[in-house]
Amino acid sequence: MSGPVEFLTTAANWAGNDGIGARLATHLWVSVLAVGAAAVVALPTGIAIGHTRRGRDLAVAVTNLSRAVPSLAVLAFVVAAGWGIGFVPTWIAMFALALPPLFVGAVTGVSEVDPAVVDAAVGMGMSASQVVRSVEIPLALPLVVSGLRVAVGQVIATATLGAFVGYNTLGRFITVGRANGNDGMLYGGVVVIVALAVAADSALQRWAKTLRSRR
Amino acid sequence: MIAAIAAQSGPVEPLIRWRWVGHHLDDLRERALEHLWLTVAALLIGVAIASLLASVMRRWRWTAGPLTAATTILYTIPSIALFAALLPLLGVGYAVPIIALSTYSLVVLTPFLLAAFDDLDPSTLEAATAMGMTPVQRWRRVDLPLAMPTIVAGLRVTTVTIVGLVTVGGLFGLGGFGDFIDDGLSRDFSTPIVLGVVGSVVIALVADLMWVVLGRAVAPWQRDRDRRSP
Image (cartoon, rainbow over all chains, first blue to last red; front, side, top):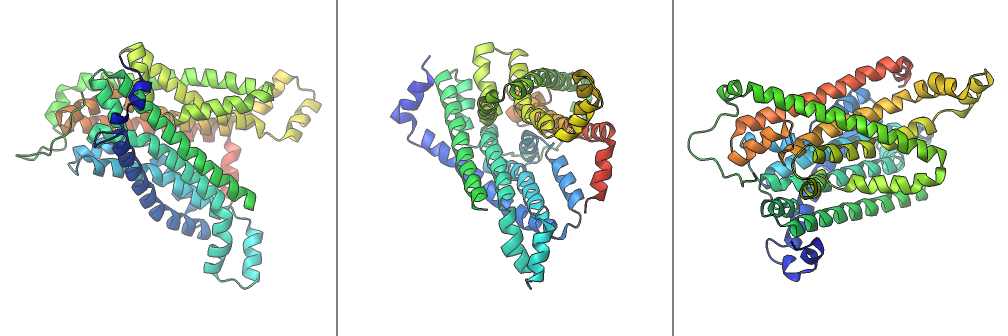
């Protein structure tokens, strides 16, 4: 049995279509596309609902309930329904995973802005859109970013599942390593995924910290 | 066990074949029970260890930093990675899912337990002591009830997480509804996939709603406060 250290330090394992480099890129690609699309949908709606506070409690309750649906269930359903294999089910499942934390972060962030601050802004003659853009969004940013942090962390960890539906994310080293009894590859893959998750989380944490200190 | 799923050709396979389901009702019951008991077992072990950890962190404050850091790192380990890493060490059986699932449940739950008791209003607690309550009485009749909403919120998140992770374990043949999904994916046969998907979603949603109802029951004042907020 060759160990994970040997697997990770062999240059040949990093190159080529089946290499760590290519799969790392695939893993990041689907994660970025899913979180990006989820942000495009969740942030504007979250900010709008947080601003008007109309239907806020219901929206947050429904969103939190949707978190109960396991990602693997979404992934498997897309495959069973015949919508595609590989990228499509992985992207859809990761999009669904990223949506709730981003949405709840935006709604809570905006709706918990101190009403006195909003009143003062209106009193200064700001229009509704000015209030949203230059008061509510900046003040909501820390919570929005912590929502983003949760979304990114979960998506990077879970994109691993894509390997089970024929998408070559980093999870592939786990499935192939297991199928071939190659423990070095299996543990090597685990190490790369954990390293990626930790790196992304600490980068976002640092960003969140600078945002908070700027207030 | 892992097969690339080929694009379907020929006559279109229906999403679900009811005859197959009819022939696998025993299997269905067995997987459902397995999914439930794995979840409950992991939750109980997680609650026990998390309570212990949270008590240690509150008793000796200096341990809070390192212990929180350790659980955070554990949480970033993807579930598949943990399952895959434990399997060669422990072999197929219930040891792997129980250890992995308990680990996640304690990781998710500990911060909630810590926050539940840390966020109590000190003046309320002092008032209880001033009324002559012993520490045990105070804990049972003041601290615990007031901490309950946060504890239940934590249990809710933890339960839902565990139900989903049991499904993931099924990809490694570790039991529960995930076994159906694994079977369906490897044979390109949608009926067991749908069965596994619906089963795990139903368990997750029912568990989630159960905690919502229970949360209202243990903290009726919470609902009144919700209603008053804008």
